[in-house]
Length: 145
Image (cartoon, rainbow, N blue to C red; front, side, top):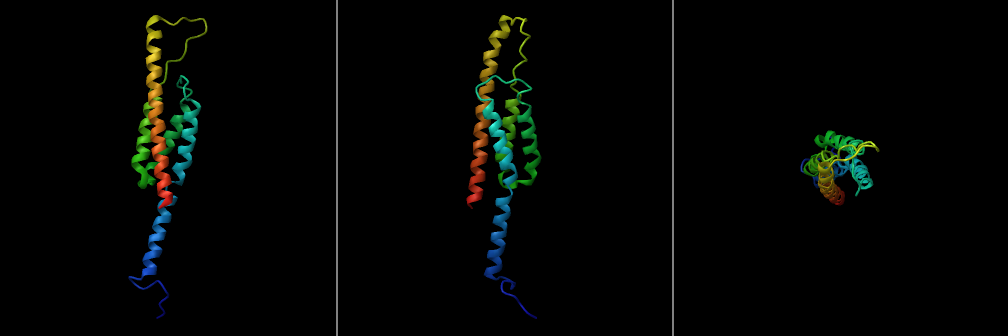
């Protein structure tokens, strides 16, 4: 029986090979969400400091759903991705009511509510940006390992 180098039980070469393989698998795991996170970050930057309506946030909803489907395949950064999804959901729930037609008038109560809603939307967008940055930092850390 011929035993090749590294095949013996308890061999340091075999242990090293297994360790490197596990690190490679861990590094490859976040590459899918990394691209989606980048797209989500780009999309939310385009909406920065502008009032957003339901149609404006459709792409953010789609990207958040894509990340949500990938969570079960990325255990190494599950908490960060769940936070991104939570913040994206909160952000998309702060949509402003559709603006009235050009000839319609805004009532006084509506005029008082809109700035408050816009402020809540901006706060939700900042929270989403922070969650995206935390997830991207986690990916960078995993790639350095």
